Image 1 (cartoon, one colour):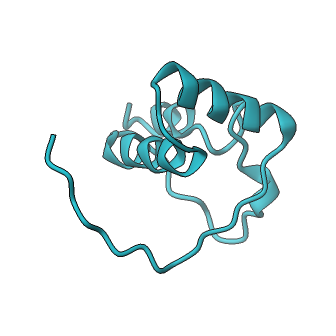
Image 2: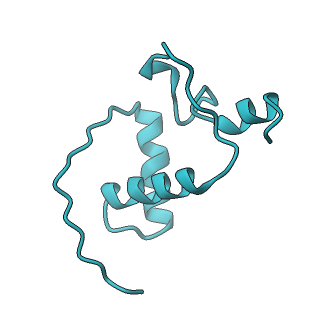
Image 3: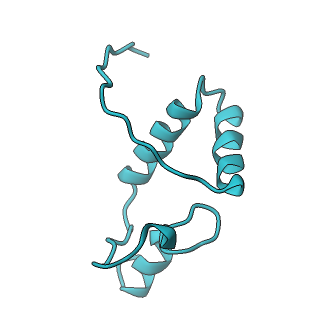
Length: 85
């Protein structure tokens, strides 16, 4: 695997529930990732490369998008309801 030098000068801060953090950490350790940040980047890469995700409707609040509770963050359900999945 080719090592890439990437300048990461932008910080993204997110708040997670204890349950969501367990899911991220479990993914990290299962996949032998070196840090939480690398695990989150990999999860984002995978999520953005999938098809069938739903675009958030205007006015939605951040709290409505969870990781572990099957809420609006799970675009697979919404996409299938819209006939895209």
